[in-house]
Image (cartoon, rainbow, N blue to C red; front, side, top):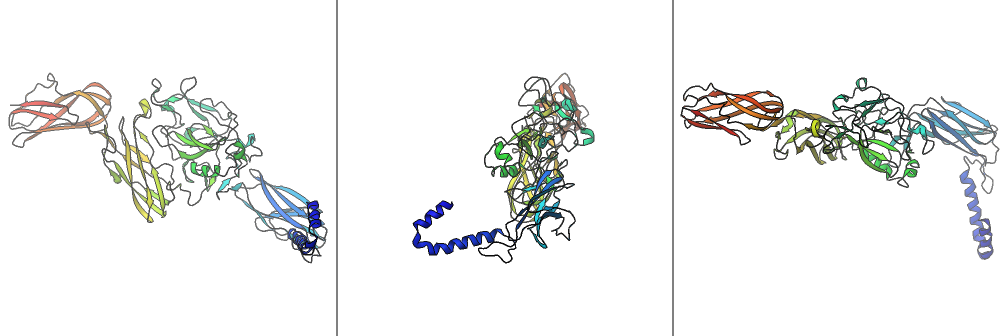
Length: 589
């Protein structure tokens, strides 16, 4: 660079007078700019005092390294270098943290311990020049927190682990969580394995006292695909089940108030869209880009429910859970996972063990509404039910809807979805089920009505089922009844023989109150309750009704005796019909 300047001067002698002054000013301002508190500089601009800087960096879950830099480029020589810290901007006379120093200029470091997550430390370097004293600018450090290019605050390390010192730091992957579980001990890579071979033996609740501290392995059979199946003898229609809890519960990790949110207070599991926003800032969509990002996402692999052992499977990739769960028919036992090898997110079974990185909750995250709107609460009264969920008919055919109330605090879009409630799980896995959804834009704040529209169809058996909003927090739930149109109860009736003459040979007497019953032989597809009723009326308006309400089990060739009431006055043969097209006839004489 110097040779270039000299050559330029030789080639431009006629410009020397002008350039000379520019060069002098350049060196003056260059020297002046790097000095701090310049005092009375001598020409060409050398500062009277040195520069002083401070920096802080996380070194452990409860530790940080403070560094002071003193550049002795002033007119007065540095006799002492130091760094000072506290809970407010410190000076040598007022501080509540600590101070370290050394003779002369240069770099000084110290490690401070006992720090809590998000604890704020104020640090500054200082220098003495004999009796003179200068301070550098105050460095404000928030322990264990990193602010990314998205403007969001994240924990600077994986939950239950140490900050990553390298991309493959084994201590950065000490905890691998099954989705939805709390910090109960199962996440430790050496935790015991609880192999469960029956669907009915899986935990039915999320209570840690019941679930225990083991890594739960839903497992059936052996070979390359040893999933626990709804029906182990018929692996039909992707019927494998790979959640650690039955029935599944997609609200366990939703929001800061998620039932089992394992993150520190004010923090939560990130959504899939929040991880996607971070990936967009990676220099390269691979592991190098993941580790060199602000989050320093490291490798460490996973713990598989298929062969969990007592340690994680070593991998060149990193895997991180999100709070965003699957919704559709074969996805409800899955949640989205970030793969750092390519920056993509995909669904995986909730019984897998993956790392967790927590994000600080913030307004406008979309987690309250599934869109850009902010919602402070939901109310899902059962009285909001419209239409009847009926076996044999699609929800749209019966115009099934549910009206809920939403308290809107910030206008914007919303996308609401309930859990997928399935009626066929004990037999063939995810065949049939109902899903309620709604989307739109809120144009006013306060409590608003939102109409959820149902889609899908019922399988069996039927029962009253509870639906709840997923991938939003807060949430709410409502219960809907399910009926079979023929039984008008929860029993699903198959073929039956209504006109068995041998069982129904009695003749009624016209004008007398009916006292004789009618026997139906029925094949019951799914047991449950029934409320059968059928009537016939003579030309004078007199009516006889056969009816019965009771419960019945599953199985073929069962007799139901309908009891009669009312009377027929006009003699004749009368037909009694059912909604499935079947009918029987009885004679009055």
